[in-house]
Length: 447
Ligand code: NDP
Ligand code: 2IT
Image (cartoon, rainbow, N blue to C red; front, side, top):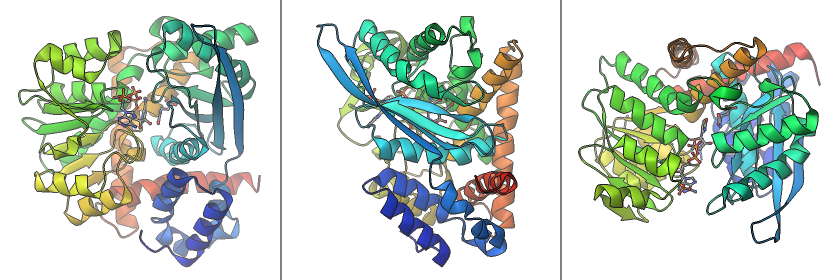
């Protein structure tokens, strides 16, 4: 890893000491601190008020037991988390992840990322994240419902439309948000729509929220291409994952004339030179909740088990599955295959080594906290609609999302220029996000 500025190195050492074993959290903190050298040099007031040290310590961390009964009548116990990281800009905001790998270090990395991402959107939202080590795979609807109810039976006391507003992430989509919202409503006896986002359209949800993260990532890449007098037309695109973010990234790329030749799930990847069939993919993943190998069977397409999707040559790569899914070796393969742009639809999918390999090779790299901010930005638009008891059209909401993504793109480039790293989206995103939160923290005093 690159060497940090001296004061930042002390902060990082303190983060390592206070949070042993939380490797993903360490990685996300290091990645931000690595950009902040020129900022602390120019602005001693941030160091004087210990803004960075305070930013690295969550305002509140909640860990709780989630007991529930499975279909066989057996009592199951999971662990629930909500990390309320920073509320300088607004109520804590960020998704819930249900996946067996979830532990405090993952929730903290996601919450830390969320602070800067949310700041970049320009919307009034702080940063938080939550989840559980519950594995929804192979569970019946009834089991998922009972788990969500048990999870909310503790979570409800910590959240609220002005306090903390969860949404979806891996393993949490419309079905889970419905069960969570139902239980919140039952316990509190309040129809408080703004307490969760990603809701169904009939009960307070926003058009475009489902599409927003994937579409937003593609909007961001469209801006990169536009600055190079280029477009998606005819480009070969590889998208990892086949969940919410991947699916709608694929949809938008196809609408813009690109060809998505491969996508994946945790079992492997599918390649189709003529392009993924989105209707079949949606049917497989959203309706049948089946494996990608079954999509491949239905299409008589090649399914490559247990190998890295990044061996498929492409012009543009969109990692949309999970953290650290694209390493240095994968990055070298992408470079060798002619890839010129990598944009993170997922949170921290590229390892630091991968980012170094890509950047050294001149590949344009768009970090998740900028490129995937469209999801949470549209969540903020959902909160706005809930607060005004209104609902907006698809076109209007999509236009708002488009202008937010263009705004983030331009702010990243302007900030990178200002701090002597022209064209570097990582530096631009980290510094622009940081300054917005840091200034608010200074204004609010030591709290
Ligand atoms: P989903 O649960 O809808 O889909 C996740 C996809 O990633 C699935 O295809 C899944 O495969 C794959 N995946 C998950 N974990 C792993 C793993 N350990 N190894 C390989 N593949 C894996 O989640 P989302 O699409 O919502 O989230 C994807 C990423 O985008 C995450 O990093 C999330 O934090 C990020 N994100 C999500 C936003 C949102 O609004 N939903 C907003 C911004 C970022 P399988 O089914 O086999 O597990
Ligand atoms: O990582 C993310 O930005 C999300 N999972 C979406 C969070 C949200 O509150 O919509």
